[in-house]
Amino acid sequence: MTMQSRPGERSLRPAWWALILIALILGAMTLSVSMYVGAFKSRIPVTVTSDRTGLGMQTDSKVMLNGVQVGTVVGLGRGNAPSSIKLEIDADQAKYIPANVGAQIRATTAFGSKYVDLIYPEHPSVQRLSAGAVLKSKNVTTEINTVLESLRGLVDQIDPMKLNAVLTALSQGVRGKGERIGEAITDANQVLLALNPRSDTMRQDWQSVKSVSDIYAGAADNLVSVLDASSTISATIEKHSDALDSLLLNTIGLAQSGIDVLAPNQQNFVDAVNTLEPTTSLLLKYSPVLTCTLVGVKWWLDHGGYHDNGGNGYSQIVDSTILLGDDAYKYPDNLPITGAKGGPGGKPSCGSLPDPSKMFPVRALVTNTGYGTGVDIRPNPGIGENCWRDYLPVTRAVPEPPSIRHCLPGPAPGPVNGPGLPPYGAPLYGPGGVSLWPGIPDAGTPPPVPVPGTPVAPGKIPPDQAPPVFSAPPPPVTLPSPTSIAPVPIR
Image (tube, rainbow, N blue to C red):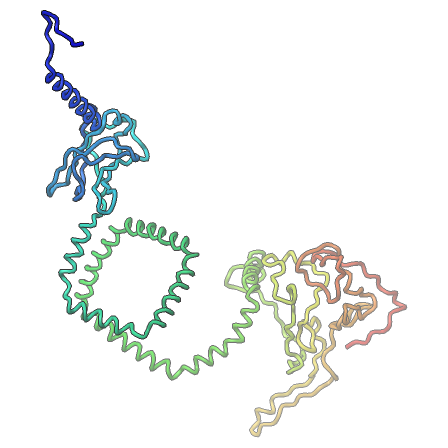
């Protein structure tokens, strides 16, 4: 059955239907392509400035943020001035991009095209990226063609003949030394193995260099001022160069004079030092008590010492008399004995100095001192050993020896102690602190109150008892009855 047109109706020819179909297909294709390329998207213009854009940067390159495309490159500005890259950012993506976003030009591969990579900031701004914003590119990756171009310029400057000579000399130098080179590499490896555990320390040292450099940077102005002042010093030295020459010549003369004086006496200096050795050793031994002795003397002067000797600073009270003929000093019988040991372990000790009053009264202080066979102080001069001395015969024309006669045998007697007491100057204790005389207690039982460093009579102190106090009274002594006392000979 065929369709027949009704009277009064109009119909399109088949050619028009074909044309309409083609138009619809082209429109659909155009719409698809436009939607694919984002022709209908709203975009905002943004500019990126960089020292250079790189050879691989082209228009329509991608603009990426965290691996997502957010725009495209629409234009490149080239020239001597810093290059600029025109970007178009999708408006629907711009609301997620902070205003302080960074930019970096990167390449997909070593030889690939470049793209703009937006770097999300560590502290993003609350403002969003807006139209007309200008971003600063941090860097442009190194291009292989740039490296090759620089290498080509370097190779052009190399003379092949000279390079061949250098390589030949190098080969001759290392020929036959493979074993030594291997040992060197092994040793270098050992050094690196020793340095690796210390890498943290080395890193801290390098970080400490920054502190040192900061200090020098802060003192740079002062250092420059010092260097500027050094020019003034050098000018002053140059101005007085003649005086300096004279000074050096005089110094040489002084040194020569010193040599002339000291050289002949060098052995004398050595002898003087050796002679001073016993004195300095003695001072070193008693150095702990020198200060307290001087301070103690000052305390004694302030507490009556001045008054005992006149009290006015220029006079002194002296009580002297002419004694009868005392025993003469006899060598070596009367050599002084200096064996006192007053400190712990026999070392020098200050005792209670500088206040000597704390040491009295003393119960018993046995010291190895005196004047040989004589007594410390002769309280009774007694009768002299010599009773007749005539020196006048030496004045005659023919001098004769003096006449010295002895009336009594032996030296003058000492004082006589009370009944039952030992003779004057006789030792009181034997070995171990045992009393040698009746009525005198042994030295092994001290008073109970302790005072550190107190000297006591010789003998052992029980470990459960402390040293005695100087001010403690002595224990009572029971004297024997007169009938039980044996006669004591008088010396």
